[in-house]
Length: 126
Image 1 (cartoon, helix red, strand yellow):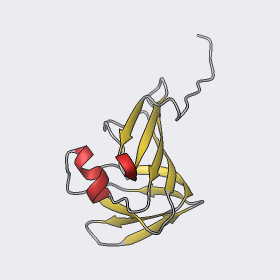
Image 2 (cartoon, rainbow, N blue to C red):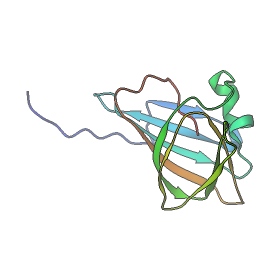
Image 3 (tube, one colour):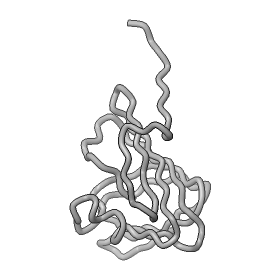
Image 4 (tube, rainbow, N blue to C red):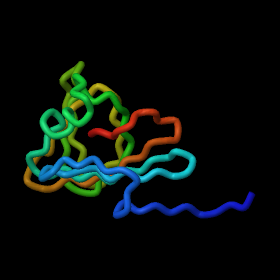
């Protein structure tokens, strides 16, 4: 079997999660199931208001996220402990399930998120 380089682009996503004026997530998938996401959250975005309803309204985000923050400041709160952590431009991060989040400040948050092929959830969340 010949090996080939695979390329996907966020401007032609396999799926998109549209949060209207508050942003969105463009999702691309590689043949092996590896997923990349470009998330944009506008000032005023909150997980509770803008994304939770799109995911079926779970108590908190049920997914683990690994990614890199390109711009802005996203505050992520672990529901069980109430601990808040700011993720800012230049941070490579891992967020465990059981959180919510909000954009802090007047700058748009942009992130690239990664999921390995074994990921089984249908939609990403912050």
